[in-house]
Structures are given as C-alpha cells and as structure tokens.
Image 1 (cartoon, rainbow, N blue to C red):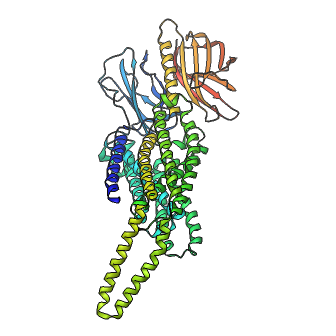
Image 2: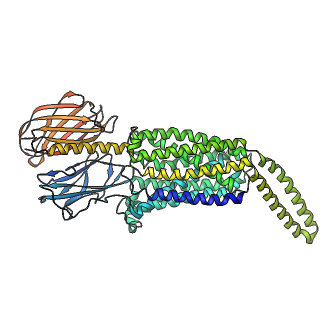
Image 3: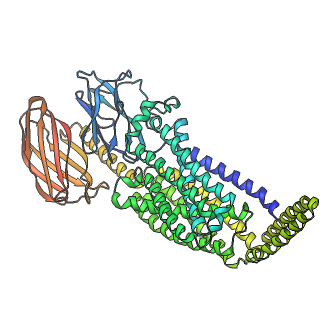
Length: 633
C-alpha cells in the first residue's frame, strides 16, 4: 500500500511545484501599492509656457532617490535640475531648467511606496504644441525582470519557511511531544529555519536592485545594501535575522535537552518553551507586518497586530499540517490518535482566527463590494477565499477520519516492550555463551527490524489511518497553491488604493478636458488631500471664472474619492504670485451647500503663474495644505 502511494506523492508534489512556479512567473512586476493620483502639469495637457517644476501626487507617502523623478525633452535629454523634493503631503516635485523650448516632454518616476513596494510609470505633457518624441513611455514598470522574479521567489520561500518553522515546532510542542525525538520531524523544523534564513538573506541582497535599476549586477553593490539597511524594509529584514538567531536557540533546546527529559520533567520546560516560542514567532510575523500592507493606510495601529495574528494562525494550521503529513508518511515512530485529535482542535481554532482576521483585512484593503470583481486584488482574493474554503472542506474530511482512527498504535506500543525484553534476553544468553554472543546480537537486530516492519504494515493496514493520510496529503497540496496565491496577493495593489486612483484620475481627466476648452476662459484645479484623520481623504476642486485680471468668481468643491460631496469644518484659499513676490492673498469662501463653497469678486491684480494653496481642515486637529499653479490672465 505504501509503495502505491509513493509515486502518487511524487507526482502530486511535482504538479504543485509546477503550479506555484506558473503563478509566480505570471505574477509579473510588483503592482504599485502607492498609486499616482495627480500631476502638475497633468497628463496629456498642452501648456502655453514651460513650467518651473513638475509635481506628482501619490495615494500615500513614498521614498525618493536622486533619480526618482526625471523629465525628458523630445530628444530624450534630461531637463530636470537638482534632487526631487517633497512639496507637501503626498506630493513630490522636481525643478526644471528655464527657457525650455516647445514640444512634448516625458515625465518618468520610480519611487518606493510606504509599504515597501516599488512604483514606476511615465506620462507626457506638451509646451506650446505637441511634437514627436524619441522617448517611449511603455514598459515603465518596477520590480520586473530576473531580479523581480528572484525577489518574488524569495518572498514565497520566506513565507514557506516561516510556516514550516513555526507550525512544525508548535505541532511538536503542543500536539506530539514524542515527535521531538523523531528524526524526520527534526529535519522538517530545521529545514524551515534554514529556508527562512536563506530567503531573508536573499531578499536583503536583492532589495536594492529590486527597488532601483533591476540589474542583476547591482545585487552585490555594497552602497545599495547600505542604503537598504536605512529603509523600513531593510530594518524589518535585519530584525528577522536577529529573531532567527533566537529561533535557533529554541530549536536546539526543543530537540536537545527537551527530548532527553522524562515526562514529569517536561512540564515546566514545555511552559517555558511555549512562552519563548510564541514571543519569537510573533516577532517574526511582525517583521512582515511592520513593512508591508498593514503598516500604512487605514487603521494601521489595529491592522499590524491583526496581521501578526493572521500570520501566526496560518503558520499553526498549515505548518502543523505539514508536520502531520511528515509524521504519517516518513516517521517510523507511530503517531498516536490522541496527538492527531489535539492537532485537529488546534487547527479549528486557527481557522476561526484566520477567518476573523481575514474578514477585517479584506474590508480594509478593498473598501467596497465592487472591488472584489473590478480590481486585480479583489479577484485574487476571491481565488484565495475559494482555496481556503476547499481546504476547510478537506480538513472536515480529515476530522472524520481522525474521529474513526483506532488506537492500534497504542496496543502495538504495549506489545513492543515485551518483544524488546525477549530480544534482550536472547542477547544476554548469547553473551554467556562467549563465541555465540555476536550471532545472538545479530539475531536480536534482525528480530527488531522484523518487528518494526510488522508494526508498520499493521499500522498502514488500518483503513482509517490510510484515509487520514490521503486527506492530509490533499490538504497539503491545496495549502501549497494557497501560499503561492497569497504571495502574489501581497505584491498586488490593494483594491481600495486602485479604486481611489481611478477616481482621482477620472477627476483629473475631466478637469483637463474642461480647462482645455478654449471658449470658457475658466481654470479648474483638482488637488487630492489626506489629513490622516477620520474621513480625511478626498479631492478639493477650485474653479476661477473667467481667470482674468480683476474680479473673478471662485468655487470650491470637496468630494470623496468616489465623487460624492461631503462637508468639512473649514476651507481656506491663498493666492501667491511668486515671480513678483505678491501674496499670499487670503480668501475665505462662504459655504453654499454640502461640499460647496464660493467667493465672489475675488480680485487678482496681475496676470501670471499664480500658486493656489488650499488649506483643508477635516477635524479640530487634522488639516493639510495642498497647492497647484494656475495661469491667470
């Protein structure tokens, strides 16, 4: 029976590895987790005169390097000067050379979002009139190529190593303490530690190239490595390595001193190992939470501990499942049905925690039901939910086999000492005969081997145990694919961010179209804001009509990212003509209706490139100022 299962196991493993490889290969470059929500000049717009600077607004904070923002003329020559800088909030800019000729200019950007993922893209605007350009804006992606694939593989292996390390150790300590002396179980947990350590070192080396040039040759650039160590992601990886050193000590005690203790002596040590192991495991999980999705965006203070619980629940369930699979297929020492039942209870608790934390994470990352089907993140999440449901279904079958599992192993263990004593007496009598002692010892070893083989055949003949082995193998297969989908999901732009970016771009395009209509003479400016407080994110729109020297009508609209108007406590506007050192001219508009303020006869004394700064206050303590330039007169 065992011989017929082994080829199936190898075939299934190869199929699962191929599936995971396909998932990771087709994942492509890491999608932007910080989305571009606005720009000045806007995409595709034609301006009368060359701007002094180009500014980009993102959905969250980003990290800049010297080459993060570039502006290229039609021949592909860089025309920016100085380093990129933060304009305010989530807006970043770069100065341009003066006296730029007419033509089409290309803006390229490559930054790192607050959740550690690289973001890249490009767009064009024109001065005077559009022209041909030698610069291609296609293919502007980050995190692709060989380095991107290796980084994705490293992420997958780090998750797998964490799950096997934490889940395997928890299975031994909490469900099957006799497993501490089983060699295959020891190799499994140590293998998880080695995998996680190796993957973390690989990610640390790849990080600089992954978020920068994407070149394989930059992997061993020490300057890049030094820069990585100063980032949030680099600090998380280094913290993980330090915690892995503590995990190595835990493993040495678990499979060393702990295994040699008697059952009575193990109680106190079990409690100490459980506390220490939980602290180390939570710290390892926090190394992901502190640098990725959970660390930015809505309710980050709640999301990070929830993410830690989620990862620990996944590791306890799937890692324990892997350990159970090893115990059933590779271990010569039979696993008791009581240990399997204990794991079944632990797995049930893990699934409950997994579902609870997963619901919160889904709400936080999606924000709406439509995001399930209209965003890539939502679609992948649906696949993950389906796999979890399938896994729970197979686990239910396993629980049925566990309930029917006979304690044949216990009876075998009771008979085994008697056989051992018979073999020992045979060995002792052999020694008394002098020359025949070697022959007696050999017979004793043969008898022990036969007893072990007979015990294994009896154990494998149990139909309930055979059914359990097959169902656990199926669970493990689904878990491998689930882990691959989860890895791709963590590299995908959250649905909430994607929808906010789409809404902001739609508003920007609408504004650009209305501003480009030659007859109106009005100017419309859209500016995204984020005060960081409750309901603190939205878009403020400022209209000037007729945008000429003298009296103007000014209207201010405040909308959520989905286009719905909403009220805030205060809106103030200030106009500054920096070239002539005029201003700021303060304007306090009157509230007209929900999300609408207006001021009449706004006097603009001189034509020029006016800076329009809008201060938005969303609560007693939360406010921000955003700005754009407008050509008046």
